[in-house]
Image (cartoon, rainbow over all chains, first blue to last red; front, side, top):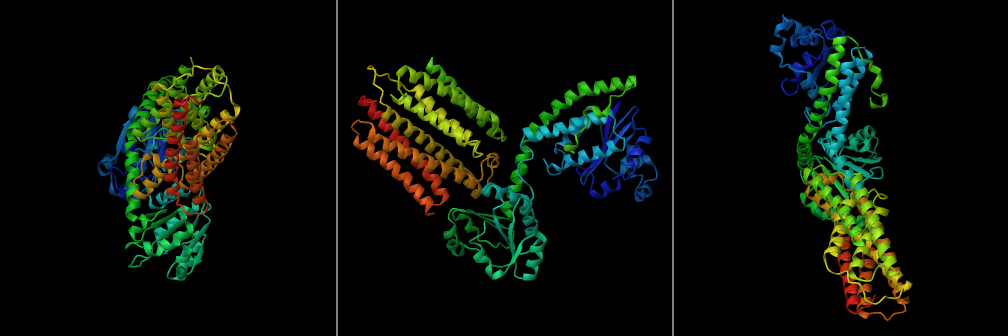
Length: 364
Length: 264
């Protein structure tokens, strides 16, 4: 049995190219008609990949044709299947290389944002869908089961997923490092910008229930408050609110800093044992940078948040070697036991049942 | 035999320290079961040592500086075992183990295990006073460790330079709550310890009593400042370190002077 992976990813193909080869409904059956005994298509915003197993080699061009067949624009552009691999930078991995590639993909090592975990859910979904349509046999079943195990092990034994890389979730992470449970935190959103809304939503998703929104235009404040499940507050009242709140998200278009040590210090006297976390995403900044020097106040402007994101990514990159070591062990083990066994099975023509160690519903 | 138990105990704590160090260097620190198990095992060997020594002496093993250090290390481990997992402060083990290693390592290396020639009579009141005071010191030590953790976490948040350990340290508010609880626990035990010294039936060394009351007043002031919201959490954390340093100096002074005057 020949195990292979053919695909396009963000590394070499732009989104336009990936769109053209994104496959479509019925692509599984097309692939089987092309000679794949088993086939699974993994399509995400960053990649289009076919994992397959076949008795005889199925060419990359034929796989590419299967992926593009349903797209009229591609078929019109490329008259013969020999040219598919010339217009798109398809890669192909076979046997152990294919196993290694899938393990890397499932673990988030091949992702645009190293260590992102969304890919694992997408792989599980693709597996479930292919299994439901009967396109997955013992070969891909074992391959994907192992890939899910490897991804879990990589997440558990390395820091590859540590830290957030988006502004909203960095803010939430930092808030949790300061306050622990966010359910008792009071949040004020000053300025009804898009990033403020995303950050507020991220906080609400982690349990914040007391959310206040203030904006120069009270109409916009009310709209945003309704969207995020908070309450609108008059713009004049925001200084008074600072005495009560724990987290301030500010993004007004003020030309001058709204918060300075001089006007914030008196408010802090009443809340000496409660920290104040300020997320300033306005440009120019709403908060004087020296406010960060006040005790118990933690100010993060957009540059600081980006710097934290870079540190998180750097931390994740440091973990790549440890993750690769875990993957290498599994690739060697899989190659030694499973690939050898499957090649024997394919020679005798007997297939192991898929359901023996099938993916639990809870894992999906 | 009893010293071997202590060496094994120190190795257990050292294992926790080494593992933490390696994990920190690799940037993959996370509080796992290993630290808790290593400290737990170390604590069992400490307890066995103190138990054997106590039976041999026929009294609470607090007759010289060596035993005082071991008893203090045992108190630190005991309070950690009680509050660490309870308050989701398992990472505290990473900070507790080095302190215990230093205390026990010093006790083992220094020639301070001097046995008294005469068999000293047991004095339950004095033993109660000494042991309860040392357990109070254990609580103060843990408050000091939580204070260090608070300052580390606070510094990272202020400077926006987040190390791997940042994600494993407890939140600032949880740490501050733990510091407050540990201070109260230590303060109550220390108050009982100081009060009990007046019922030992022995003449009280004036300088030591004044110094002990000085330490008591320092902790009382920290708690009062905390209660009245006059001291910021960061300063409370820093004062915990100052307070424990003062308490440790006093402990050393008391034990040293007791040894030089051959008073158990």
